[in-house]
Length: 148
Image (cartoon, rainbow, N blue to C red):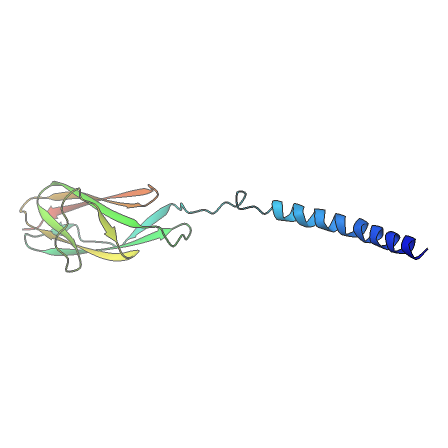
């Protein structure tokens, strides 16, 4: 009689434990890392402060830009590339050497200043491309009239 009571208790315990184990297993399998989707690619906008329309030879214009991403992913990197197609001048970041046209430069900050110095007596135009490590691109066109 004692053995039957032990067998019944063990049987009841198994009947209670098995559904709990099944539910636990199902909850683990529904949270697999394959189902998690982490967004890394966030488009961005550019905020550009107003700049003068005219520039004289040897004059430097400060261009203040701010990258505004539509989300945050800490490992996103931003780059700059520029190309001058009218007139002559140099574009640089802080006291760094002037950028070379069409070369790519990594940006260390999302808010920064560029300095354009005219070396021309005619109107000048150039484009700046800001792009990120996921292929999102923004192009900005700048045009300066020659100042007498």
